[in-house]
Length: 268
Image (cartoon, rainbow, N blue to C red):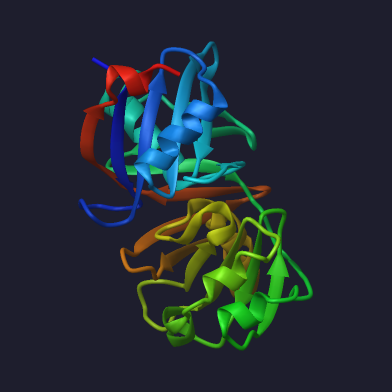
């Protein structure tokens, strides 16, 4: 048997929705190049690699092109796998040691709640090529340490956005969030997330983007608890709650595939 790998749909309550992530729980740390090769082979927006440590699990995330500093959906998927495989107890809190510090996940019935850092944006000038590649008229442009955030007039503009990904790839940021207030009663705001520079043209449901969206829309609505809908083709709902300098992200996860890398592929 080779290295086991599990594919999970995160921010989803049924298979083939939300955002798929691959999860590898490793017996020991592996070389960066091998992890990047596995992520490229899986060809999902993120593949997560975990190694048990004394006070939790070391967690790293790779797109098919690069390692990233923060990822929500693959963390949700990782916690789901740890509980599902019995690596931690059913009522235990999952602790992840990451490039963005300690992240935790806990169960609340079928829901998983993750404690992440808030990443509020500040108003910024649009860099060359950003608006031209998005082909939208902005109401406001902001950015945080990861991404640009572009607010547009309404939900129809978010849904119709069709970027020029080749041009967008030249914008120096992990990705770009396009957002507006929601038009329906089920969500407070909608968004889409584009990250061609990181090897992901459009991410289906982006937990880490909601670390930016939660404080942004929380300030606009004057509320700490909101519901976001990411209007990608697969789509997904992220419930958020502001807690000082942290954001609680809430969602569900469903396992869709379990397998093993071959012996040859398992050897770093």
